[in-house]
Structures are given as C-alpha cells and as structure tokens.
Image (cartoon, helix red, strand yellow):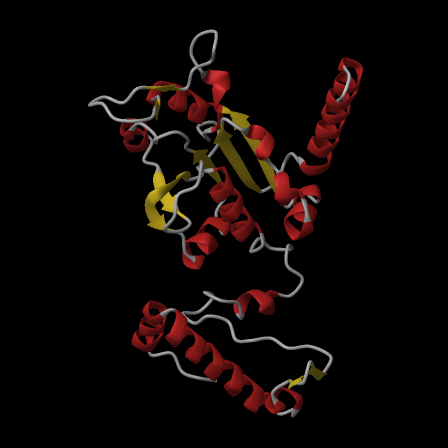
Length: 267
C-alpha cells in the first residue's frame, strides 16, 4: 500500500510528464488545426502523440488542443448536463454550456472557418471521402458527447455535422475523435512518406485493399503467390486488382456494387 508521501510523489511525476507531453506534442501556427471539446481532455493527444501523427504534430504540420467543457460548466460543481425533458434515463448535455465551449474555439476571428463535428452513433457514417475532404480544409472542431447525448438545439444552432465511426455505442465521443483525427492527419501533406501508399489503401477507391506479402518467400509451409515474385508488373497489378475485387465482393458487397456502378476499369 502506498504512503501519502508516495502518492504525492506520483502526482508530481504525472504533472511533470503531462507538461512534457504538452510541450512535445503541441505546436502553434500549424496550418491544419484540430480543437476537441471534451469533459476528459487528458485523453488527448493520447495515441496521436505517437507514430506518423505524433511526428507531424511535433513538426508543426498540424496542431491539437483539447478544451475541457467543464470549464464552462455551471455552479460549484461545473455541471454540464441535466435531466431530459419528457423523462427517461440518463442525462443530457446542456446547450448553453456546450455553446459557450464551442464559442471559445470557433473561428470568428479569422477567415478559416472549420467545420464543427459531433461524434455520435446516430451520425452519418465516416468515409474515406469525407476524411479526405476534412484533411484538405483548414482543420476541424470535434465535440465529444457523453451521457445520453447532446441537446438538439445546439446541434441545429451551430449547424454541426453528426458523424459516426460505426454501428456500435462507445462510452463517449473521445475514441471516435481520435480515430477521425488519425485518419485525417495521415493524409496531410508531408505526413506519409509515399503518396502512392495512400492511393492504394482500402477505401481510396471503392475496393478494399489486396493481400500483402513479404520475406520469407515460404513460411510455415505457405508460399508467396508466384505472380508476386514473377517481376511482371502488369501481371502483379492485375492480380492485386482481382484479389481486391474478390475480397470486396465477399466482405463488403455494398462497396462492390458501388465499384461496379462506377464503371472503373481494371489495370
């Protein structure tokens, strides 16, 4: 069991590490800016401080700021929610509190208006096309809901875009926000080493990605498909396309139908 002195030392260590992470991961003056409104700001940058996103953050290619919605809460307890009109279980996030939080990061002071996105399971499914559009813009403001949801009036008043990352329910919008930011940041200029990698990934077209292989050529009695070791680039391209089409047809017939309807030609 830890002593009070040990607990104090751990809190001091955590505070120092938190300051270090903020210095390492924050960057002013970035052209692509992300603001996240949440009641759990300590969840950010989280994994976005690592790998490609983290390097891009440290290099100033993009910036991230997490704002605590409770800073705009009401009363001594900084309340951000209340009981729902009409009855029902749970609590609803208040429109006045959320609007004040949104106003604190909105872009009224400059010309680069960023879209306001609410992460919610009832939103429009997030697609690679929408991710690419967000990456091509000035950035994004993400509002992370909690409890039973957000008062509809602030969504309408702020013309917020409701986005879902899948047909399941999370405890809040924070993990969804991390996923959206990771998907967008990797498309920013200078983040990925090879632009061709992004062009061949799943969802870049209507097809899922083809299988990948590397050394050794034979592993556990399984050999790499001969076409990939043939050196015939035209045959390799055709094989990969056929594999992608077959995988998409079996796993995502909805995407495959879109591909067929698009009239895209095999390489």
